[in-house]
Amino acid sequence: METQTVLKGSKPKNTVQSLERAALILEVLSRFSQGLSLGELSERVSLSKGTVHRLLSSLSYLDFIRQDPLSKQYLLGFKLVELGNSLLNQIDFRIEARPFLIELAESTKETVHMVILDHKEVLYIDKVESSGHTSGLRMASMLGSRIPAHCSAVGKVLLAFLPEEEYEKITGGDGLPKRTENTITDPKKLKAHLKQIRQGGYALDNEENEIGIRCVAAPIRDQRGEVIAAISISAPSIRIKTRTLVTSLKDQVIETALKISRKLGYQHA
Image (cartoon, rainbow, N blue to C red; front, side, top):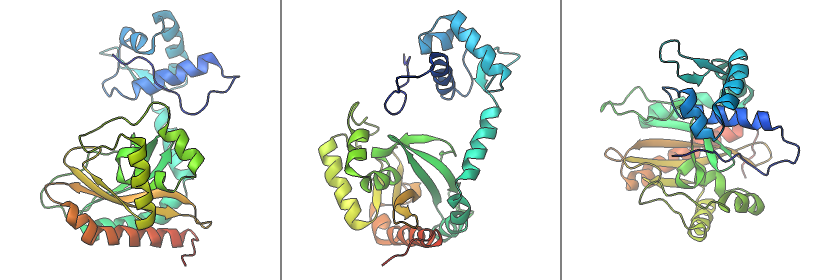
């Protein structure tokens, strides 16, 4: 059973223990949509029931968590929705990018995502589904969800354009977890693969994160030319073959990413 979660980045020397524990509780609860009991939560965060109960009381008062009146399970509170929406509203380029994402989704009849890099993971900050799907298949991704960067097209694009020092921090340590049989888990192989991505300006996910899903992604740059986000076209593998990603969809996602980048002030040579 998983107990602790790894906090991101180097740990400062002056952290407040109660805040660390509260953050751990919130992160664990985020993984269980049906909630957890006090005992289950106490076991997963490796703290006594008394300690967890005191933290839950404070978090509940602040509306960061809530307790279902019937099941008595603890769940995330609605204050987090408010804060999450505020964060997304602060990411101004989402507003600039959205019309282009809609256009791309409708022209390809597939699902389009936009993500940013957050340490070893990518964070979904926008998603547009085409209204033209005929098969009824839909992507299960949600705004605010995360996946490992090394096994996704959008993540590999963002890793490819990182400074060397930042890349080493992300790919070192715990290694690269295997999500499917196609996931690249060898840091040396990943580094060589990312070099090809830099040269080509796009990345593929050939069922590396999830069996049955293929993606192609390209980077978004700001006015300084720095890569700040990535967009992708995602589709079920039964509908889209790898060849189609390279021969058709690749050019469309690159073109859309460039349009967004220019909107943000990027001057392409």
